[in-house]
Image (tube, rainbow over all chains, first blue to last red; front, side, top):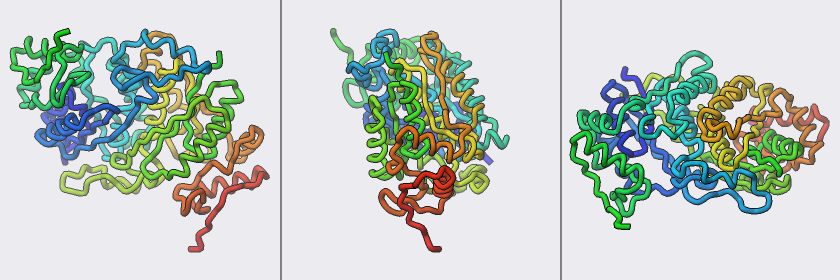
Length: 235
Length: 235
């Protein structure tokens, strides 16, 4: 019987290639998309197409708006109260990179763990990368190993030793160009993957944010045509 | 300046007493209620009243419907597909106690961690109890210690050593009667707390589920009147 694995599918290039690698390993893929506050409908539709084309057994989309509790440029404005009772941390904002989302991968892996245990599976695939995103603490191998330990303590299946949970991060040491070559080899439809932090129009990319720049450079270095529609800003 | 602490407030008796203990310790309380699929509006309203009466600085309610990914009597019917592609785990359901929710506290603590870091705080209060809920792996001290280690690896504040996250579980070794006495001492309005797994009517309790039985016995043993409106079933 095919082994089930939950794949965290953001709809970005990395998670799409991660899903393709899980399929290549023969896993029965259960794709999980967590919908942050300001995700667009076309991004969800693209994730659905990726899951369907890559033969996912099931694709779940879970809305979760953490913008009211997590300070980040990716999740909206600061929710920290500005009254007299405001804690010291409210002034610390600038020290945190604007695209870092507090505890993001802890939350994503927690949700993926719930599904993995429910399915009787053991593996969670996540498209984290420690090369381009070296500033993110929750993209490091030591974080992923710590989550595995936690998962085995946290769950019924882990405690009863029915399961030994593993977090698989096949892209963690790859460059963007290497990831793109892997995706190309596996037939990933890059036109359905999005990377832009702040899309200026449906299915388009700004071309100038960090994520867009890393993506464009990656395609250039890989020597593979980039199907992304970039709407380059002039200012 | 008052130290901020995030309190996971389900609206149950235990979390209400936990919030009162955090206030007694002088914390500025940021109460976080995660709304599962079938929570009722009156339960949210009760949580709001508890947070307000106990002087919480802020109360956030976050909808999160995990019923499509987590198999449990508390979150709805099994989401596990029954087709030919269904994994081995689909048949394991009965081995898991029906009220156990896979990875629940991992998810709740992950969300609380996001808010705690955003606030510049270090403490998360959770009303877990290892006495009445000894079967739950994610109510044990070793799970909470593992989460603390994870939190310090997962976050910017932890890695930069600005924060050392702690999970506070002041009720973990108390009996239900002791918890009720603590709540009574601190003026917790028990009429606004609910415990029933399956309320038969708004602001009522079935009186017969495990949670109701533990609650009733607790009030009896504590010698404190139980304001709960039980709708006892005859069958």
